[in-house]
Length: 59
Image (cartoon, rainbow, N blue to C red; front, top):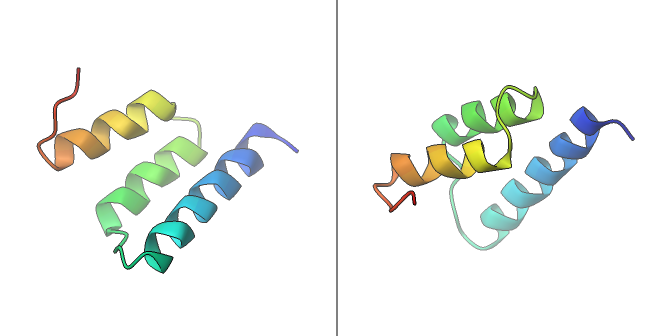
C-alpha cells in the first residue's frame, strides 16, 4: 500500500468514527484532510490546523 492510500484510509476511518460518535466533519476539516492525503502537510500540520481552527493551544 502506498503512502497516499494509507493516509486516505486513516482519514476515512477517523471521519467515520467521529460521525458514529455523533460528531460532524466540517468542510474545512475535509479540505485540510485532503491536503494531508495529498502529502502537502504531515500529521502535525493537520493537528495544528485543527487546533488553530477551534482556538486550542498549539504548543
